[in-house]
Length: 108
Image 1 (cartoon, rainbow, N blue to C red):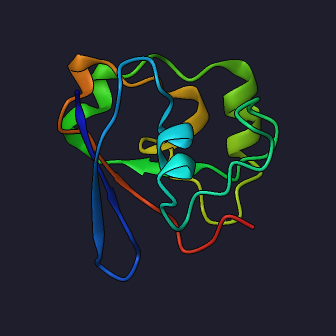
Image 2 (cartoon, rainbow, N blue to C red; image 1 turned 45 degrees about the vertical axis):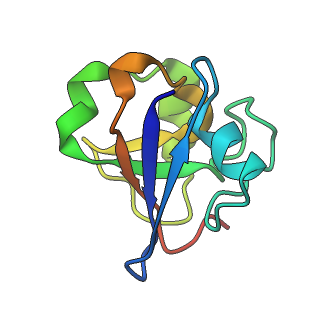
């Protein structure tokens, strides 16, 4: 299983083994990772699973879709034009093994 690291704003980190096909949001919520709310359940309708992708894997991700792009304009913390993504829109694959994401200070 791919390993994904979630970095908290205070410097703590959580490393998860995530099954292929699981979204970052679902992996975080299922494992009680603080900082991911996932209020809409993964429908790209709330932006409470906003993450900042660390640069090593930016090119491995699918392009930002129209709905995701719109919701990223509604995040509680500043959107980073290169690094901001919605965790619900990123499905883990073996290509993403070692992915590291930074969690924002707030989701709401």
